[in-house]
Image (cartoon, rainbow, N blue to C red; front, side):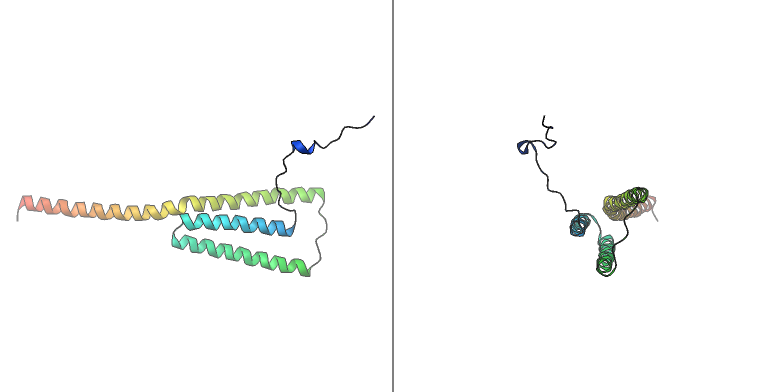
Length: 144
């Protein structure tokens, strides 16, 4: 008796292109994420925050370049134990979550902050003008 084939027939599967599980795949993934962050930042952030974001991106890529050079000169690390691998995975997920949350908050609030500042300045100017006009009108009514 023949065991059933564990693979479904080819006609019923749709293969989604996966990133290669290599340093090249990691690098391409990083480049695409940074590209998306910078693109959104270009559209949503004020000039000062955009500059800060570009500096952070540049610093990250300097670290990536340094790590890439180190990979060529140092021996590969020893394999992790299952417990150490689990700790690393948990810590990495936590750090990635913190980083993405902080990036999302910056992108979501930066333009609002800049536009709020501009809007408040305009409102303050209008309010000051109304106060000045009001005091002029009152002094005109009261007379000299």
